[in-house]
Image 1 (cartoon, one colour):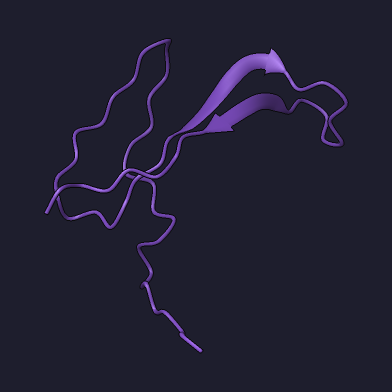
Image 2: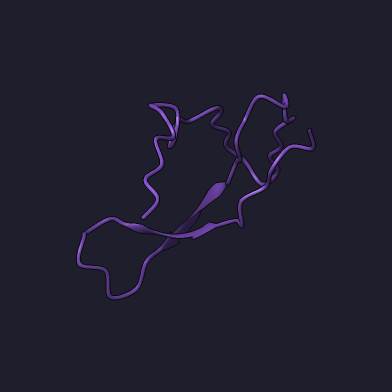
Length: 64
């Protein structure tokens, strides 16, 4: 059985941007990064009123 201790930085928000274009330059210190993209379109059949559609990217690892 493997148990991993990734530290408190897992889930850390590095940057937030608004608009139709966004970007992030990897520093090389990240284990990985993912982008969460939130739409301006309301989510259909949501259990939470006022929720918007969203998507996640696949994780990206910096080259070491």
